Length: 182
Image (cartoon, rainbow, N blue to C red):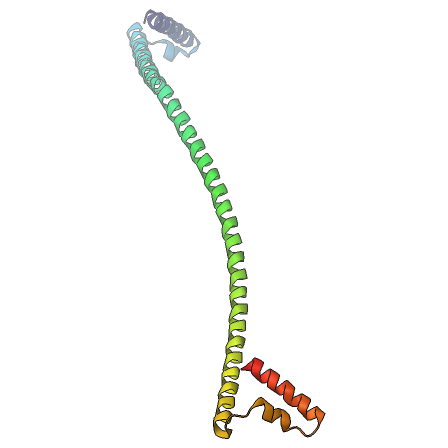
């Protein structure tokens, strides 16, 4: 505070010298100010200086208060940056996990497509076999109906019904296929 008083006195002295010097340089009408007027101006200047010093003290006090808050704010910034890094790391880990899962999904989709193709092939084979079974059932039913209608025919009768060796061979092959078929 002594420094401020010394400074304010020095400032007041300089102001006084300035006023004195300016009064010498001013026209005669300005130089005719009375000592009371000059003292009044000096008092007003001193008051302005005191007001400015008070404002400076208030600003320094505010600055000190703000400086006390600065370490806490810096710590909060560091904490936020650390949390941000953790979040970024977690995002990176999750992105990698998502990419891995997408690759697995792609593999599974390829397997599903292959299975669907295989199922379609099996369905086609099943339909063909079903048709073959129906055809065989129809033929068997016709054969049974023929046997019922015409009576049973023995293999020997079929062989003996041929007129030449070619017909006997054909009859033999017919008997063999019919027994395989039946």
